[in-house]
Image 1: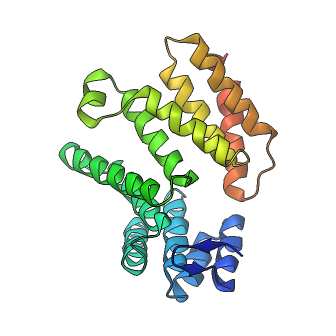
Image 2 (image 1 turned 90 degrees about the vertical axis):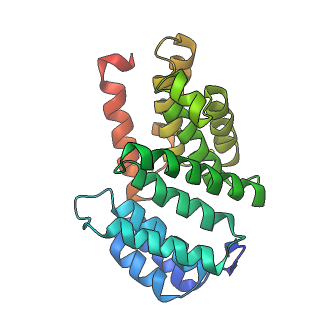
Length: 228
C-alpha cells in the first residue's frame, strides 16, 4: 500500500487513481474528494490539473483544482505531495496570469517545491517540477533567469535526479528531452542528450492514457526536421 505523510492510501483513492489512468479525470476527482483525506484532496487536485488541459475542461476546472490543493495543505501541511500539487496548480495559473502576477506566482511555486524537497529530498515530482521551472525560465534569457534565480545547471541537476529516482515515467523523459533541446539551441551536445531522452521515452511502457499521449507528443516532436 502506498503511504503518504498524511496516512495510508485508501481503497477509494486507489480506485480514483485507476480512473485517472483511463482518462476519467472528472470521475477520479469526484471519488477522491469524497474521501475527505489529504491523499484524496491531492489526487483530486492532480486529476483536475490534468483535466484542465483537455478540451472537456470547464472554466472553473483549475479553480476546483486549487480548492482541492488548499484542502490538502490544510489537512497535511507536512506532506510534500500537498506542496507539489499546489505548485502544479499555480504552474497552470502562471500561463494565464498577467506579467506582474506571474512573477509572484513563480516565487510561490518555487517555495512550495523547495519545501516539498526539504520534507522529502527524494520526492521525484518536486524535482521534476523544479527542473521544468528552471529550464523554462532559463530558456527565456539571462536577464529574466537572473531575476527569478533560474539556472540551466540546476534544471539538469533536478532532471538527472528525477530519472534516477523514477526512470520509468514517460513524461519525465519527455520533459527532460524537450528542455535539453530548448536549452541546447546553440549546444549540440545538449541537443544530442535531449534526443536521447526523447527516444528513451518511446522505449517505456505507458501506464496511463496520459503517458500514451506523452509518447504521441514525443513521436511528433522527433518527426520534425528541427529535431534532427
